[in-house]
Length: 144
Image (cartoon, rainbow, N blue to C red; front, top):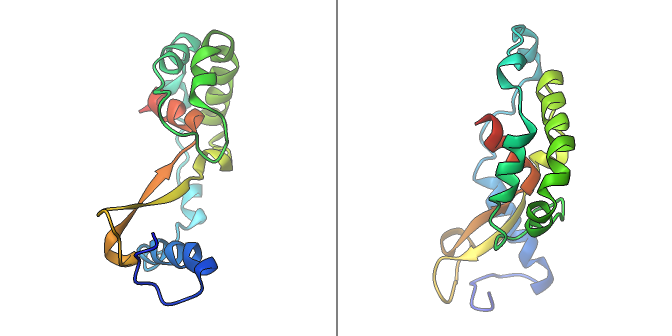
């Protein structure tokens, strides 16, 4: 990243990259929580998640991928899948039933990755890669 055409103190480079990535979607309106009141139908019975299904997804986790903001390594989830599948299935089902998703599952660590060997511009030569929590990806797989 030393080649970036960045005019500022080196300790502010990460902040400048973050500001650019955030600016890409800054024009989009925030979701209005008031619309949730209109969603009255309960479809949670259609998404009952079986512990065996959770275990199958956990067993197939790609362990070469980095862990996300939750810090849980994917190899750990894979290796203890038989022990985690029932508690995770219960949490997933409760999440669907209550219409609540833990905030950590909605978070991501964004890593700037150069598009070219010697990036010079934050705007054109970097692209964001989002590291998501592995548990959230398993949850999404079971309902998706």
